[in-house]
Amino acid sequence: MPAGSTPGPRNHETGLASLQELLQEHLFERLVSACLAAQGWRGVTTVPYYAIFDAGFDFHRPDGSRARAGLGVRRSVPRPSASDLPFLGSREQLLVFEAELRLRRLGVTSATTIFHLEPAGRDVRITVRSDGRDRELLLDAGVVPGDVASNLFGVPETGRCVELDRINIQYSLPSNGGAEPLSLIDFGQYCIRERFDRDLSSMTSNGPFGLGGRMPAASTAFVQPGPLRPNPARWTKRAAGPCSMDEFLVDDDRKVWQGTYDASILASEVLRGRTTPGEMATELDRVPMVVPAGTGGG
Image (cartoon, rainbow, N blue to C red; front, side):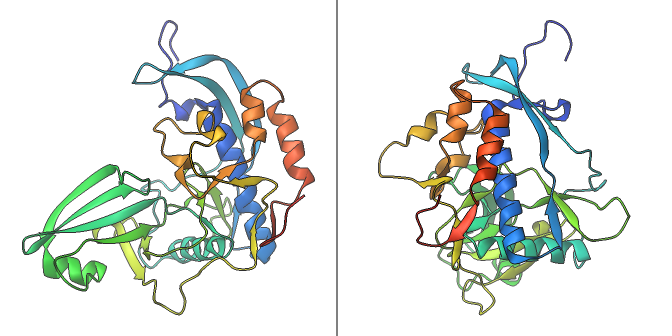
């Protein structure tokens, strides 16, 4: 960054991000990797962080607040040149969709944004919204005829809103030029759920509205969490009322940690200066990230 410039929260291409965001990335990369390893599937892998550093200065957020800056170092990876989304009908699309279903078996999902379809007379307005409590508007895709929306999204009837989960798995391409294994990157959008209730949409770069297919929640292939879950020793369930982690583990838009679970207290210890990212990684390695559901963890 040029000398004298004010560091902001949108300089990720430089390796700079808020420290809590990087810790969140690290935690979810470890969890996603553990979920895949527990199932013995090699269709995708994850790109780990080599190191996370406290940058020694603060971010300035648009609202005037400040956040500690950090530097993340990970393996260099080739990104798809045209789009982060796979082509319709490609092997990459199938791998991404299978990865989401496999993660859901353990209660983990990348789908923290939703297609929101709302009747507008005989038409339907399509928007993309966050999966937070306020359903924050992220993108207004516009109004389309009701029959078009019905054909694309399976809206059963006019007069009521319909929402679909949007898969948001980001990946890099294999260095050998093949389709497998895809290397998953960017884990800030992942979260943990006890149950999945909305239809699931597969996203592509060239499908209508980015849609590449839809799996109804009533389908026999629809996945709910099974006997393995994130280790409660590493992930603590949110209690009613304010959660002590909220002060620390939120992204710059305060959207990520509104799910059913919050991350381990380890990350807040880093932000309080009581431990280092390296010591946190060592502690994470000490205890399994996924365990049989209902156990007390380690």
